[in-house]
Length: 353
Image 1: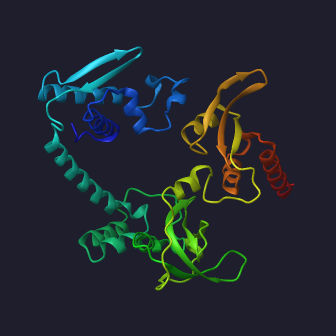
Image 2: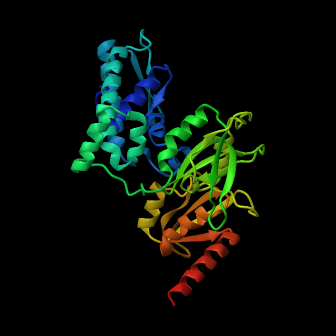
Image 3: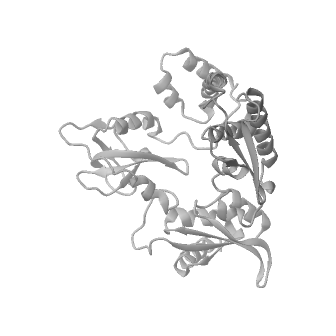
């Protein structure tokens, strides 16, 4: 059963792992691990049975239950509370399909190698050169890319300067090295930087290096394409690590990578969708993880629309994302964000007469 492919295979893996804890497991438990955005608040107004892949979820439960019952009859107990079913494993073995999982792991590793060979359309070849230098795999990848055999690609811009440094920067972070390099900000002179690197993040096709500069314990970021020299290890300076959870907190309430000065902090942002298409798009492509549906799309007293609310700090990345959706997305509140969006629209309108 572990060799099932696609979504059903993922459900099987999640379900088996949960059952081996010997706790009660429901359809909802498995689906929420597969798709965290389907949380309890979401399910108050949406039925799990209407979710995409629900039938595959049910089939995965049946597959695992039948397999365990064949191994040890009656080892899975099924209960029903209210509308939902729960399943609980009571078997003698703590991992009855250990050997089958090992076959699955081997198959998965082989799939991963095949994926690497086909991924030069997604990841820069420099990354593969770094990890697979002088290997037959790299030669095959280059041959297939040159021959046009690859069948997977991304729209993400791969010509950004400095992106090839990502693997070595990751090693510097792991090894806790203090680094020096020359950085060239937009519209300013190049400057020498000494930093304690902690974290790498991609946003909108661009990579950023986060850490402390000098002895200041304030998070700063540098775009990799603006780093002009090869980062060098600095000896004689003690590395300053970031406390656990620093970057989880740093990114928790923003879209993108930047915190702006003079903001009101985290506040509710109400977004109105002006078409059913946009409403459904926002449901699957959230602006921020905090986004919740507050009004389903439909006819209301003041018009036809839907609404979402997200709790975020305002920054240029949030405004930029909102503006990319044009007239089908409207900010209703807070007024400070409405005014900034209005000014941007007014300026753009002036460009076109």
